[in-house]
Every structure is written in structure tokens, then in C-alpha cells.
Length: 220
Image (cartoon, rainbow, N blue to C red; front, top):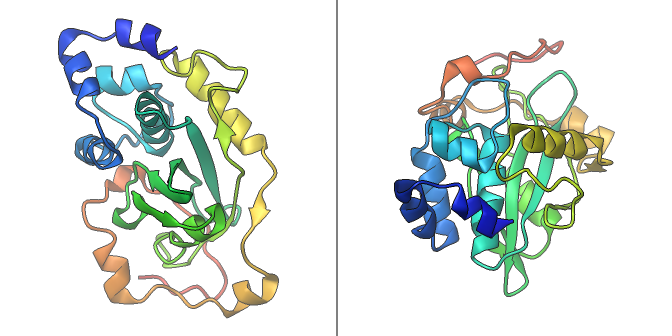
């Protein structure tokens, strides 16, 4: 699959692709790729062709680039409380048994993580404080098990939009693994003003989820 994918690239794209020689280099590419506010999903080839990506696009691209480096192509989905926020997809990998991630996000705090986390839950919880909506509500509630894209039946997620769509549909069908109890949710405080504003730096407002208003939620 990766050989076929590489054969679809032009010379400039191939040089860029081969230059992504570490998770940090992959993340740097995702960081300089403009955020797409569109609903349409992009496969890795379309990310290179269009020069745009949102979180699913970035996760698929990251998984493909990590796969080229010898890591299994794994993605997980982070799920918010329904009707409060977007989900967020990560490409995850392990080094010496510790988990890390690369990701594309509209928010500063939802991008990469170093491979220092003992398990996936610990990695996911590192996103908790930065996972908030426009009302300042902390919305992360669950995550999916890893989807291994090399073993997944859809074989064209690298170069066809339909493949990217199929991966996303499969992620949404996975059973969520809860993170918080109902008591924890009731005790959550809203984002403080400094953190809220700091993590909104560079946000493309056209791509921000518009949540319903919770009773008693404090807007920023």
C-alpha cells in the first residue's frame, strides 16, 4: 500500500514525504498545514494535493507517515459529551512501550504528545484540560480502542476520499471507553480565562464547533 501511495506522488511531494523522518517532523508538517474547516474528509494523498487538513485528515496522514517509519498505522478517536463538541482523532505510536501521538487540531493544546505515556488512557487524559468548547466547558468523556489501518478491511484510505470516509465511519462505530464518572462530570469547573485564551491562539473560527448551551455554563 505504501509503495503504491508513493508512486502517486509527484517529485516535490515525494521529497517532502521522504523527509518526514521522525514523529517530530510529521508533527511539524501538520502544524504548518492550514486547518480545513470543511466537513469533507481528506485521505493522505488529498492532504498533499490540497495543502489542507482537519483532525481526521491529519491523523490519517500521520498514521501513514508513521507507518513508513516502521510504526503500525494506528488511530484512535476522542469522544466529547454529545452535542457539546467535535470528536478528535489521533495517530498514536509506541517507543519502548510508551505511547505518543501526532495530530492536527484547530486548538493549540490538542496536537502532538511525546512518547512518554504508560498506556492509552494516560495519553488520552493528557488532552483533558485542553479539550474544551466555546463555552469553556471541558468536554472530553471517552475514547476508542486503536484502529489498526493495515488490518482494517478498507484498503484505499491512503489515496481515496471514500477510504477516509470509511475509516471515520468505522471509528464512530467503535464502543467508547468512558473516562469520567457522573460525579466527576458534575464537579468539573469551566476553563479559566487565561488558559481559554492561550489555547485559542491561531484558531480558525470557521472550523470551530458551535455547541448547545449547557444550563449554568459560563461563557468566555
